[in-house]
Length: 117
Image (cartoon, rainbow, N blue to C red; front, top):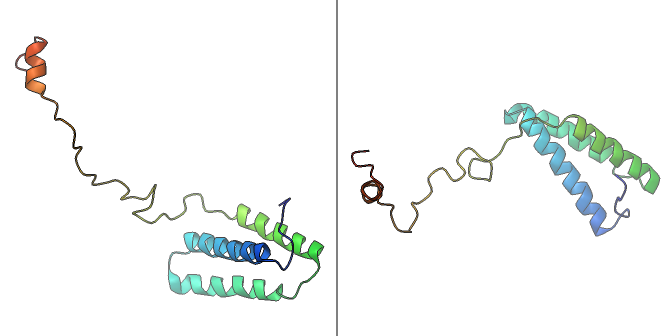
């Protein structure tokens, strides 16, 4: 990533938290059962804790690039979407009917010579 935030700032903390959440969510896409996923989540947490005391900005940048590359190589092709979220399985499934005027098919057919259709 070319524009990493400066180390030890609020933007840096936000980036690390975002990276951690993205990795955990991606792992949850691959491992649906929470009891099996928990072991992987603990391993991810241990990896983040191992690098907690790294203070060199260049080393941090290398760690972040490695983590982003690992995340991108392991991205799930069909990630989980909550049912009510956009692109979810229930998104806009039961929309209310439109409130506008109702189209009168019989009147239209009579006017255009399509009686009985």
